[in-house]
Length: 238
Image 1 (cartoon, rainbow, N blue to C red):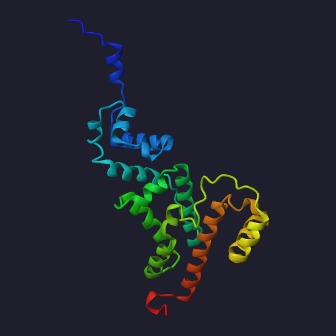
Image 2: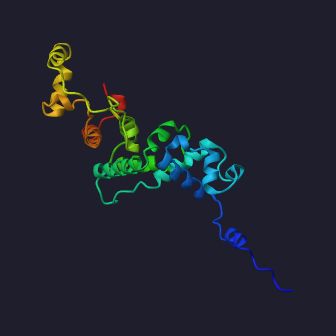
Image 3: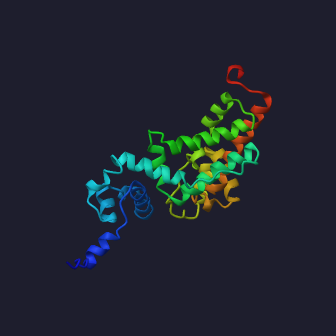
């Protein structure tokens, strides 16, 4: 009996990439990068993968597990510092590497902030940052408090004093309004003038966020270094 030749459709199906957890997560990251995390649903993800929605549940239990896995893929993009580096440039490398990855995925910040479960990938990164302090001779006590001070900066972002994203260019400042503002809020005006080089028309344009992030990071690390040299411990802080 001559074997029946496969049809083009059957041949294509035979060559279809098998569905697995990694493929599901990477497709979700790609969808979030293109359309925002709001667009990521099990139904739309199934459409993108060419499967029925129920097929996804063999690989992720629910939407929350899907988001956890997406964060894990972002964390996998973080790079480790050269082991020969001293603790401070090592921590800096960890954190700025995280920042580069988060900036590549604009949705990641909000999803990271929303996570309540700590996956092995997340715990592994946090352990690596803590380990950089320990290798620098920091006590576990001081490391604990410095990690608190860093907060979300270890993930490459920090809360902004003012959210100026999406602001339209401000109209030229009205001299009378500037004079009134100066009377009421002289210190804020001084900050705005320093930030804009005296050109207050740029006051609503926002700051250099990368510069501000690195400034705050270095401020925390320099302070941590001083405490470490003093042999600081939380029991004797007063």
